[in-house]
Amino acid sequence: MLKKRILLPILATLLILMGCAMANEKNPGPPPPTDNNFDVIVVGGEPEGVAAAVSASRNGATVLLVEDDHALGGLMTLGKLNYIDMCHNSKGELLTRGIFEEFHDAVGGTAFDVTLATKVFHDMVEDQRSIVLKLNTKVSGVMKNGNTVTGIRVSENGTPKTYFAKRIIDATTDADIAAMAGAPYTLAGEDIGEKDRLMGVTLVFELTGVDWDRVTKHIKSGDNPHAGVTKKAAWGYTNEGYAYETKDPMMHLRGFNAARQDNGNVLINALLIFGVDVLSEESKKEGIARANKELEYLMPYINKNYVGFENAKLLETAEQLYVRESRHIIGEYQLTIDDVLENRDQWDRITIGSYPVDIQPNIKQRAGTVVGSPDQYSIPFRSLVPLKVENLLVVGRSASYTSLAAGSARVIPIGMCEGEAAGVASIYSIENEMTFRELSKSKDDIEKVQKQLTKQGAYLKPFEVKTPIMDHWAYEGLKTIRGLGLLDGGYVNDYRLEAQMEKWRFQNLVNRTLEKSKLENPYTVDVSLTPTVSEILSATHYAMTGEQISGNEARKVLKDKGILTEKLEPYFAKNYAIPQAAEVTYLIANVYKYLQK
Image 1: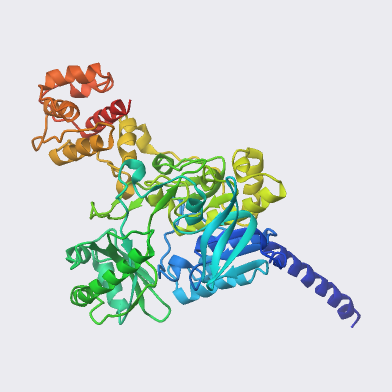
Image 2: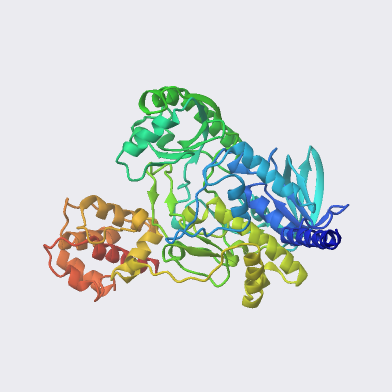
């Protein structure tokens, strides 16, 4: 009896201490303010915004989370995109941890139930008493003091209101707050001379009556190396997708990405829509209507041609479109395609990514492509800090990446980790009375932010990864052309440099490269099926000048201009030889560099 009397108080004390430790681990934050002044305002209830708000709250901030729709989760819930593009390195390590990993585990993995995800997002926010959530609240403008953003103007159930904060986080999909505030940006592929090269948007649709056992057997018995199936997800039916001719010429069907709901329904990500102005609500509504009309023709095709979908019926479509890109903010550092595919680490890393550079079809190019596949690369804090605007961070797919780099960095796990980092950085900058820009330039202070993120579960280990293609003699040329969006290595980073240069590849290479150069009137070239050295030299000169001269004459001119360098000369010495792609790619890269001067 005496032992019990002694042990019970000890156990009670231990339980209290354990409870305190758990509370400190996921600090619910202070009580919310009674006026309209917060420590942090997060605009956007997307997964990135939820992560930012929760992170800021756990670090002791009062937070206003503003979302213009009726629920949290955005693309993952209202857009019904229930299959996560994960980031693992070649060792199989999950690179995006912390709050994202909490969400991932809470919904049961990579493919998840949308209803459950909606609940998880709301629970994550509601567990933080210092977060004030405003749904159905549209931001109409920003408050500024010079270049410093101090607050937002909103329409809250039709009533105009103003909220102020010490720090603002833009977690909208299109970086709307940064754009309103005057931050510079490019649109779609504008940075590589292709402003109209906007990746197609998708309307996810939900089916009942799918026989998952038949789907599983069909995919497992097939020979498509890029198809696969689990208990909850399947990807494949590529041939069936490409064989479908859309009634709407501004649409395209690709292979299925399918993921199951807890009730057995299946969500399909496959129908691409072109011609949608993603910055226009009316245009997006029109895109949804067009896609619903196309589904009237598509469903009978699916029933007839897709194994396991014979009895499938359309239940409904998502409320929101899956928009892959729009604005690309220009920040203190703009992540490049070379950063991604050279597996570069950054001193101010706040998360690490690895997703392939997946460029979906667009209005001009109806077949998507994979520019390359990294092992791992880091996202710098500087990519969250927009130029020309103070007191603001941008997280998610519209952060400071070039359009090609965004093909990888746009995925939600990276954006959620950025949101978590933005929450930590906001509180650190407030407590240390420094701006985000000052923080972005201080290695000592960034290390303290990284230390806190690591404490919260982030994976931020420095790394050095060898990238074999960088040892190729023609890599500098390859890098230039790849940076223009004209060279793809696929999932295995094979740029076919040792293949003989053939007609269509050469013509596409030289014609499109010169289109992107500063040359006012590039000339279109046409060569034979297997062009010789002499023909390629002559055609290259013609593309630049419109003057037709012999291969020997072109060799001399290109040498004099520094285009045919000493390094390249041996590869172009024999007029009737058939050159490889490596030397021709390098030659055209030198043409581009020459024209830029």
